[in-house]
Image (cartoon, rainbow, N blue to C red; front, side, top):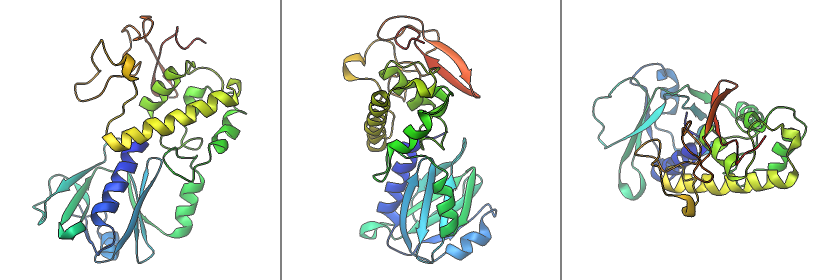
Length: 270
């Protein structure tokens, strides 16, 4: 599932390429056809992300809420756009910036729906602070973490605690700060939490800028290749059974609340 930096990157792109002008909206698949008809021809006034949620705001007061889930993805397309490829839930195109037409197709999202302002408020109210939003308050997350017996590895993945963090950032930020994913939240110090939050802000901003998650410090970025040729190296994510980049201890794997968990037992002692 895409992590928060991906949604912020998409929001920035859509804001730059489509906002401020009328857009054509359709649903070739048909599952969003009635909603698309209400949006077609209206001005896209802005695009923003909250954690893993993307919001398109229109001058009509309507907002499209998109959650990509495991399989959703946007595809850019030249204009005029050709025949849809696959099950396209949402198609958008507009004049773009500097009269350069721009179009996108959305396939396979978990959620694609129209929301009104009160429903948006309900959605965002249930999300924790997002490290990539300027209005984020990390103390909101600390209030829940510092009172919880749940392991910090679970709390970081809970979107009600902190919005936008997924499996990669969870595994890597805990390694970078030498914290076991199994340590109860209430055993973290406030200083440790502040360091984790500051690091997440910096790492996720790099993710927005570069489009990939860069989590290994330059001085450690050598040795065994990444788990995937098109991804930068990681410290522990998807490296189970391999030696830790820092201490050579075997990286361990487990499952925590249904999600794969990776950590180094030496660098992240219980």
